[in-house]
Length: 462
Image (cartoon, rainbow, N blue to C red; front, top):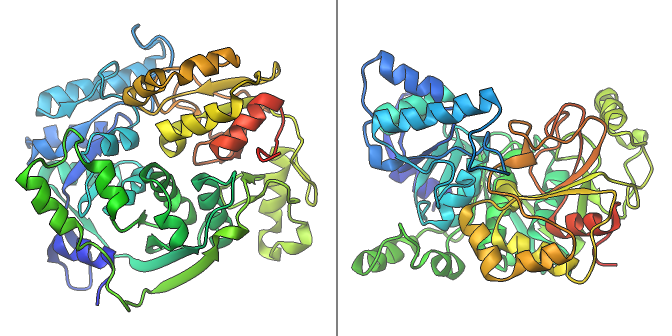
């Protein structure tokens, strides 16, 4: 009996070093501008060509601006990184969706929506949130720059085999609770190190009820509890999502692929190395109050008191709250905020924009809040406009920006100023993540929408 992870992993083993790592074949690698330059330089120094160019896709996303992409990038560091990726892709004959290309956007949004990411695949990228693609029933994980070079040269990578973990969410999510809330709840319960060394499979009624885009959000955040990656067994939701996308198999090849994909599930009675179960009914809209994604709570809860924190962690806990300007034992619902960010590889898909727009329809943006609404790809941008969501947003006082990673991280122009509070639908709230001194409160699209309208942290169900 085998887990889904076991089946995919073992189907891709090329060789195993006794007492050491596994040489794993990689079906697809995504390359962005931040972690690939040294890898390409290494290839040049060794006089190597990319072993299998068709299985490597390049795209800038971290450094690109989200306004005026028609003009050259103003920041010299960002421009150099983006230009370097363009040259590397050209020199090595790789597919490159450059800034302005209709398939450009955030690489972890573009991959699934174009059918480049498929069930049963092994996928890597020099980015920890590669775990996103596991939602399709794939083994997807982030790698380092030296490993990027390894895959370019051989289409393989050396990896230690992780242990297996299953997280079961039973029951039904309550109204007003999103998949982002589910993920933040699991991280808060599991802690940021609770899944270290494991590859997580998500299961249970609540997971099966999620759309594909919601599953992508959940798997995206797997890394934030220390997991090597996360995945969901493919089912009819998966197959319906993939059917007809540009790079998915067609005709007889689709039928053949589908027959294989239907075998990709954990065998009945398989024992995982670790298993935990949560109840969907216990999950409320979530917010973080500290400086790691595990410091989360229900929006109406109080920040844990110092006495409830393990003694070994109290100093870092105090420092975290000091950075955020919060006190143990207080509520943060009702506290003023300055920025709202909807986007990133966590919540930059069309369903996220539908949720946000549905809430703000007929309302007006708070005057004291700056709001960045950033589609995860040009395809998402196109769909927003096709559905008329942009008109509703404009009527409510909002403005769409152009696709990119944007304010998820301070690698482009969208930085939150020091001391300002940002309600963000992205994946990390580390010190300085959104800009030096910025204070980040992670939340889902509905909490973000409520904050954008009220100018403070607000329960969207009220």
